[in-house]
Image 1 (cartoon, rainbow, N blue to C red):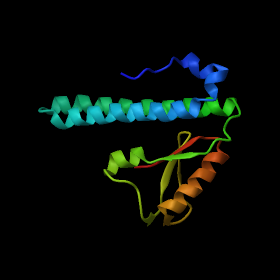
Image 2 (cartoon, one colour):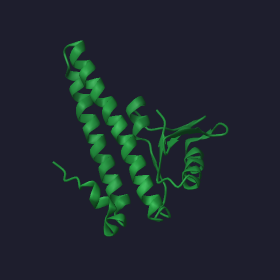
Image 3 (tube, rainbow, N blue to C red):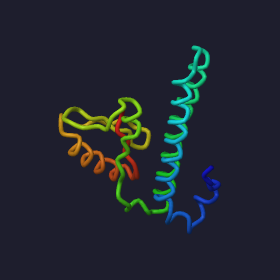
Image 4 (cartoon, rainbow, N blue to C red):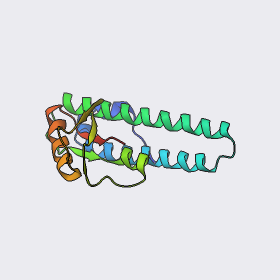
Length: 146
């Protein structure tokens, strides 16, 4: 089992320098939880079991969202938002079972807001656009919508 620091560790000044690295590790941990529960849901035999696992997955998604907001707020308050913005496609991959690619109207979630590209564009260009929007909003992560 991975060690997850307490909330106070985020507030500690020395820990703020490591928040981006920890955020990535925490995101991996959340994805591991999601994948474990999704596998269990696929093995469930009754509709009731499947519903329980679906509820757990919904709670994991909400937790993932809240963690992102918390980390963004901490970084904004500590003026360390100069770090590079990340585009996280894990939610898209969960929904579609593949990496995003191609052309189209792309949507991203940044600090709890759903935003969409102003016109159709490649995913690579959409990521560049989303990074600029995330920086404007003082966010560290833009999630590709699924």
